[in-house]
Length: 107
Image (tube, rainbow, N blue to C red; front, side, top):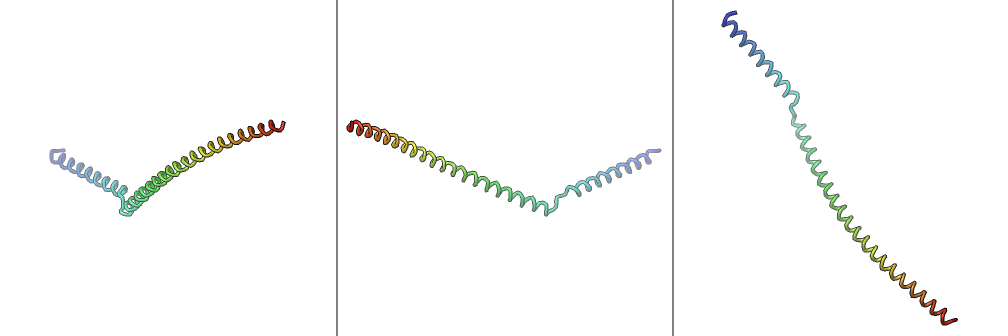
């Protein structure tokens, strides 16, 4: 094999390697290429996800406000109950004192 044949053989091998690389690149890009409809669907899904997150945030805010309102109402009801129980205790004590005084005056 002389010099010219070696150069031609090397050129052919390099050209075949280039063609195989180009074909492999084309094949890979052909299979992983994203179509326009897929991009549109991804954008739509991203928009729906964003809207769902906003709705979730609004629901969380509403629930926190509602919980604060109910906690406040519960505190007020407990305070009223405590005041009522104190009043009832005092009324029972006064009623017992009046009964004792009435029984003492009879005897």
